[in-house]
Every structure is written in structure tokens, then in C-alpha cells.
Length: 406
Image 1 (cartoon, rainbow, N blue to C red):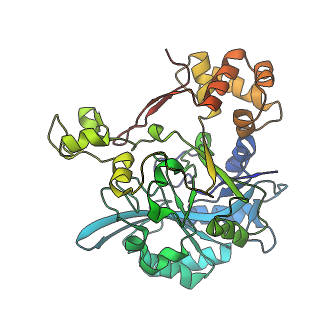
Image 2 (cartoon, rainbow, N blue to C red):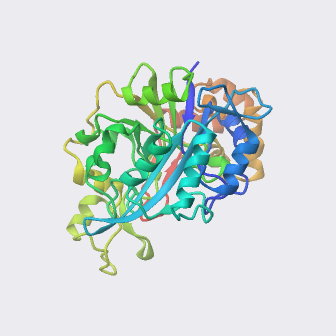
Image 3 (spheres, one colour):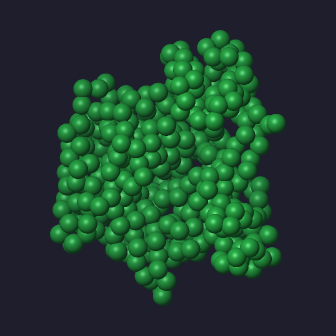
């Protein structure tokens, strides 16, 4: 029995996030989606931390938690994302990082330490802290030496370790001595492993994919699949650090073109360009002559030392996904994935006893037709074959994946 992990999401206290993102609803959504281990999110926020204390129960000394009163099928791991904004080498850096701790007691100590240092934890579930990530890591380590680091969506232009606007050109330049202690790197929605394998300096790290969900719908839009459920928090991170392909099987991925920063562009002018076109334009918008937002594909191209198509041996594989409700909406010709008609078919499919990921990846098309209709089954078949039409996102605009080409 495999184990699905989504190790980065947010709570209702993060900016632009759904009010439904509370632990009971998250746990219920994980069961429907097929997630076995999910991040707690936002543990630095005082009100959310209270919510964690009130609703979670430790599973012994494993470093995992469960929802109080539940059977523990869905396990929680304590996680938060911090936005670090600081100056180094004459440049303003904006880096987002996921940090993990093994106990609520350690979280309480950390939050007290950050408050005493004068940092505002009340404003947002993803707090902004004006501290170099190296110094922030030291604070976490002083609180609990078992803390873990995963740099978030590493290529995003504005807020990431390797981002074109405010990042660095390598893991070591960003993290210094902490680089060797990093558990894994999160590829983000606008890139996939195939893109990251082009950069040999990333080879020593596991590449993880997480939803970074701001709503229940988006849980597991990206995720990680292990061969079995790790017994402890420490075992989970050891699997990542060892890059053990027998244990870390594959990631579930957005089509990177669907991410909102895949190509270069200027949203105000409606300009979207491939990297080679941007270079011909000297990275300036051809309409207004202002600087383009250089996307993930451009940034990877700049730092890559391998051709596209290179496959890293002994690395976990990956599968591209489109969420089930998006496929249903496309099959029905409905624009909104939240429509009543889409939800009716979605609920009908899940009444089979299968979760969403099982339906997308493994269930027979005959059964899917029986439980919904042939058009929805055709959409899932096209997804499994990779027969989709892609329009790349840029400068904060999501791209498009068309299941049924017209």
C-alpha cells in the first residue's frame, strides 16, 4: 500500500486562502483526495496554533499527529512557510521556505522566540520575517535540532531560492553551510522533475512536489508517493535525504505550463514569450519596453548545464495530473469546476469507495464509465496518455490544459 504525502499547504489565516481551510475539513478532503500524510500549515500564526492544539493529538512519539477522535488514517506533520525578505550582496532577497518541527512543544518554543525577537506573527499565516534564511534556520535549529528545511517552489520569480527577481544562482549561495542539511527541494507548479534534472547542481537533492493549496479543492494537485507509510517524522525525512528510489517512488505534477510563472511575460500588456523570444527582445516587453517577468523556463535555461530531455538515473519518476473536477467540467462543457453539475458527478464517482487519485491513475475506464459517463472516462484516458493541449502561464496568470481539443 503506497503512501501519498502533501507537505505544503496553508490555513484560513494565510492571505487569499479559503475560510474552509480548518483541520476537520482538511482531514475530510484528504480522505476524498487520497492523501495519507498532510502538512499542518501555518504553525507560526497564534490563532492557527491554538487550532492545532485544540484539534490534534500526537501519535505517540512518532512526530505525527491525527485529528482528535479520528482513526488516524490521515496523519499530520507540523509545517509552516515563512517569507524571508532581506538584503544580501546589495540585492533584496525574497525567499519562501517550508520549515518542519516534530512536536507542538517545539512549535510553541519557536513561536515564543520569534515573538520575543519582535517579529509579527499575527498578520499572516505565512509571516514575513526580515531575516536572512541562514539566520532563520539557526533559530529553528536552536529550538529543535530535528527541524527540517524544504525551500519552497524554488524557481518562482518573485519569492524563491532560485527565482529570477530576488533569488540566488545555487543552493549553496543562498543557504551557505545549511545547504547540506536541506531535506529536499520543492519544484513548484511551474516546473517538473524533467526541467530540474537539467541542472546538475540539484542532483544531490530529492525533488518534492506539494500542492501549496489555498483551498480544499487544490489539495494533492501536486504530491509525493512513497512505497509505504513511514513510521516516524524522522524516517520520512531520511527517505528524502537518502533519495531512496525504492521508498520514494514518484511525484504527482501539474503540467508545468499550467503554472502561473512558466513562460516570460508582461501581464499588463498581455505579452507572453518563450525564453528565446525574450532574449531577442533583450528581456523587455515589446509593447511598453518595461522589464519582462522572466519565468521558470527562462531561469532553468539560464542555470542548466544539460539539454532538455535528460533523465537523472535513480531518481523518483513523475506523473502529470489534472484534477478530477477539472476533467469533469471539461467533459460536461462547464466552465466552473465548482458548479453543481460537476460536483454531482464528482460525488457520484467517490461513492464508489475510490479516492480521487485512485480514479485518476488506476481505476478501469469501464468502471469510471459505469460510475459517471463515457465522456468523463475518455477525459481520464486522454490524461493518462498525456494527450492534452497546453497553453503556458506567465507573470502571475495560470496557463491552460485542454483535455478535449477542439
